[in-house]
Image 1 (cartoon, rainbow, N blue to C red):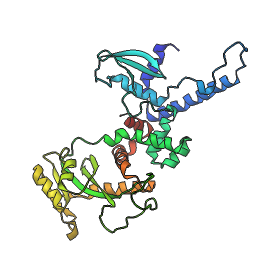
Image 2 (cartoon, one colour):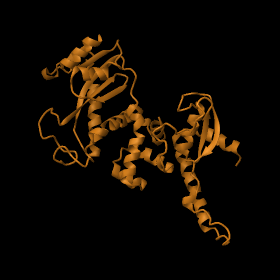
Image 3 (cartoon, rainbow, N blue to C red):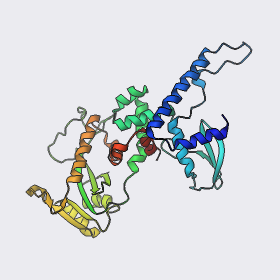
Image 4 (cartoon, one colour):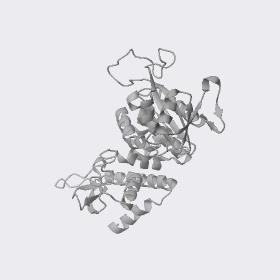
Length: 341
């Protein structure tokens, strides 16, 4: 096949539906099995000839998932080093097209500067993205992909690096805010600062304590959602999360905590505080049921992991936001696109 025909195929990948991409990936894998079998069954060369390449020596394969990323990048290529759009094609390496920036003169490919750069075993990326869609534990991911547990762990956090940073720039209209709490965890650490407990265990103290990690969730009626781990429940910590994203024209709805009232006054926001302890669940059209339902779904979804290390909690928050934002449209191709950033 000539180069021009191959490039037309790559460009057409961006127009394929998810089901068509899956079918194409299956066909490519079948073809690679056939090619590998032909190489393995080929007659041995003469002794004076160099040894044939084995299946493990084959050049990297352009999988449909990577081809889709390259096609998307090619629509609006930009230098990841200086952000210039003045670039030109510069050959190929490791089954990826390379480009050269006319400004800074640095070469790069579609993965340079992304969380997926220099990540190996690209043929498995699509399956790993599907494992994220399915919400599998690391042990199940490692078994499904037939990779080491540490590889599954490293891939998970590479794939979640971009989603955990993707948050709405603004919350508008009626904005509900509330906190939820997760048990502080040092899961995976070699030297614990406290006695070990069962995974997904319970705090030794009742109620709120330093064993609980507060997470502030804010959500508007358009389902735009942001969340953030808090240092504490002070007005300063809450303001650091809400002030950059809550529109000045919004109405902030919360429980009756003084910290929210103080923040709203400082930021010049309209505020409705519900006295939940007195049974006040609504005030006219205002309530915090949407944000509370989101928090409940988050806690239920997190239970499958039997506790998450606190230092990685923000990655899981981003993962769940992606699930909620994409809803029924989330599939392996969209998950991979989110991981690419």
